[in-house]
Length: 246
Image (cartoon, rainbow, N blue to C red):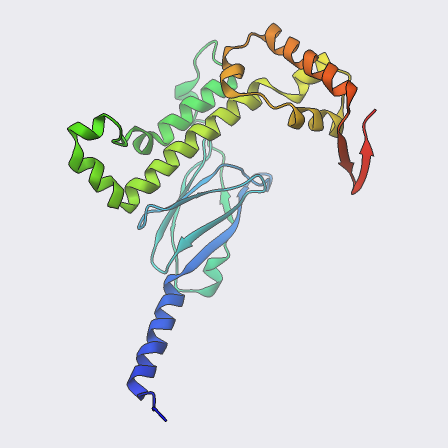
């Protein structure tokens, strides 16, 4: 029988332990420290790796970290928070509380701008460094082949590119939500509550249409789709029971 050398066993244990220490994930919830409301779209950045995570609708986040990493948490209209991951198991389940910054948007308060536009300007200012870094591709790669090649092997460059693409998607969704609102739909069609939400989910709109359409065109589009809705109301769920909207 082949004996497994003791020193090999020790090395294997060391490697397993090292990997377990390295491959940790911090998770928790981002809260407003004034009313304890969960905060969506907060950016949690690991400054060592450049990895970032975004809190979901319930304020929950999850990010790869290890002991000694420095994390920053930022959200438009809130004071940023920075902290170091300590050598403690409890550190990997951490709720984070952000304080509102009432003066943060003062520089962006411009007359005739909508709340969405002011917030969008603030977000671009907050994430400007990452958004302004160009991703060389297409025809530009012909003139900067070394830069284009380096990007393909740079972990941070690819992470930054993913953030740029995700950012555009988030901005489009926020703009849609700023125009195609339950309040607007309720002024056009006789739907309320879960049925109204179901209608909006059944008939989503594209970002290009949301940007180009006038208020009248948007209301006409809602009315047209409501006529289709009346022909075949969708089944919705209320408190776990299926009901058909009539």
